[in-house]
Length: 373
Image (cartoon, rainbow, N blue to C red; front, side):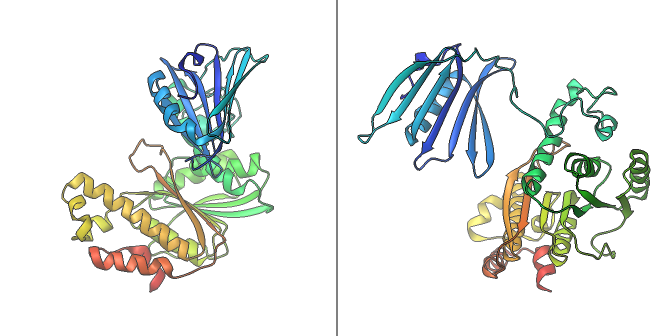
């Protein structure tokens, strides 16, 4: 192992792997974290995204054995001492040691994390959600939900951080009463100073009535909720900037995607839910047959197949699409977010792939039908 085991002790602050060659991540930063037990958190950076892996001490040794050799620069920062490794032309590493004035790590979890919606900020929706107390402190039992809400806001912020627009129109399909629509409104109006018009759609009249009352109580004048069915009702028919659909049921997500495409929405954020259509219609697919034998496996394969088909079709419509892991607010296994931003040249390349797959496996897919009819 390049980094000697004895160098990873109680004085360790962090290990940085950089200048990768054929590596999975552009950079990796590893820090000790004190939870119920001491562990090590590796943060892998790739394309403006961060991926976390938690490791025991022995797992850390194996991790470094595998990863470190793919990086030209390795920096081990300890309290009072810095050790650097630099790969030379022969492939071996030159070790250097120097003093520093770094203090011992406190090893607290998320010690450097700066949330966009921090504890103490006066956000009424988080109080109503039970995430904040009345004096805007995090309720201990709701810390996971606090992190999840900030995760959603961070993903939105990634897309809009550099926007020059002073006003935005956002539609939220299947909004329910999760208060995420309120958080979204708060983020843009208060945190970013952008004038937004937000419309939340839901099928339940009592939910819509309640949400409109809450919006009025908060003083959110440009936030409104409407009873509507995205699959058949006439909706807002002017240009829109962003479509959100978090846990819209089954094919309602497809209708929301089609609406976004037809109305030129620049950004889409979607976490699909209960995707039954492909599961009910698929009857066999050669190489896929073994994955369709067992119910629970079939369900998950069909959900991932649906996500993939939707992503491919959105790419053809001129969107740059990525699928990111997103832990939802009800702790459901539906934790894949489809994030799409318009800006590419439309094509029909992926449509042919989808058509061949549908024919071979014998399934139906609503977004394909909506975009081709």
